[in-house]
Image (tube, rainbow, N blue to C red):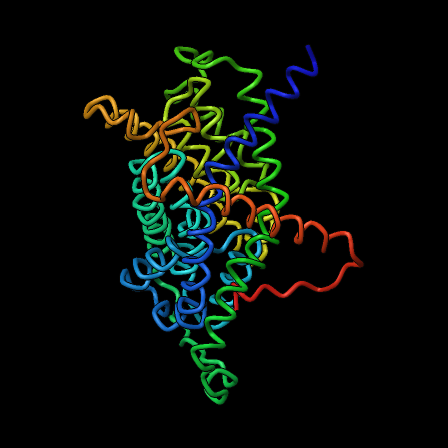
Length: 354
């Protein structure tokens, strides 16, 4: 019996890995190239002052950026230390970890286009909301001029080839280093959930949806850390077990954006007031948008467009022949990343956040 359960768990995890691999590889490529363009130093040019425009721009910049635990906090600290306003930093901090180009493409393939688009839109809206509230709180504070690094102004711009090299390294090396362990844990948890919980077991229970289920998922997610990509297989498995897409959305939002470590850092860098705004917007905002998503699915009949899990109906964005080569490449990259962790520790430089 135990061997059957282990086999079922591993099989479910392997199926999810195969389904996600081509979307992750495509997302890593796009995210790496994007990171070569949208660096914090560029975002800083648009993040000065307490204006509503600065808040909206930083929220928009944060949606596609592939910054997870490796890059979100350092990038936010960079913005703050170089003159970006607290509202702009707040907006960036809320919108960025919820999504990334890699995560959105993976969500499209596993959870469907509705969930992918909804995550992108709500990440922007929550970021703008958090920045807007912070702007009201800090409306009387003086504006500090944005600093421009002397090194940036005197160092010649790298040629296109070098920028592409850095971008691809960010996508295929730094990104994998950042998510490998969490992603494998997420796959393992998804496999266990799939094997342990029969399909639709949670449907109709108090945990399947509504405010109670979403609040439970939110409270469970706050102390933990799941990056926006590694949370996808867990959400897929939970949806198969019967939780609503809106409840899965809450997991995908609160998990990546809130964890004990980041909250502690934010408390030191932004202060108690802005940290409270950050947590409140994510907790109440994710539940509100989760309820809205469930209502929209019920009203417009979008559920089949959302629930494209590994049981047989992945979204047709990539050809079937791309699955095995992508899985092999992703497995090799993860093995290489895990192998580096066994070597003597050294200071890690994440080119994605520079």
